[in-house]
Length: 89
Image (cartoon, rainbow, N blue to C red; front, side, top):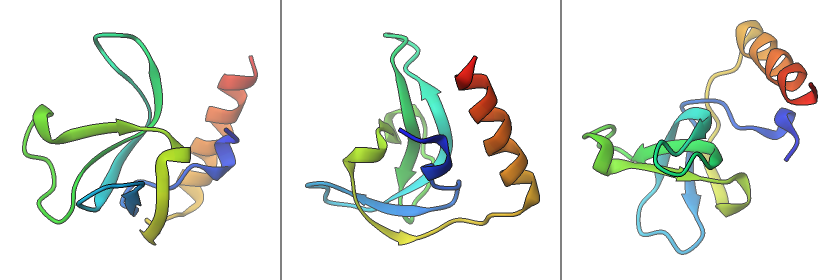
């Protein structure tokens, strides 16, 4: 996926066939057990983080719809540019 398409943290989304919305709290995360990389990690909205059992790793293509797009500013733009450079190497 194109790094520039990553949603900002704080975004609230619905995954395909989900029963609850999730809020994204991290991007480009790895599963500690398998080492597999995911585009996002999220927690159930509106409860938020209630421990590792309530955190979900998922890919951008798993998103059915975006309910709310999180905050974006110059720091996020710089982060995305740095992330892009990292993945181009």
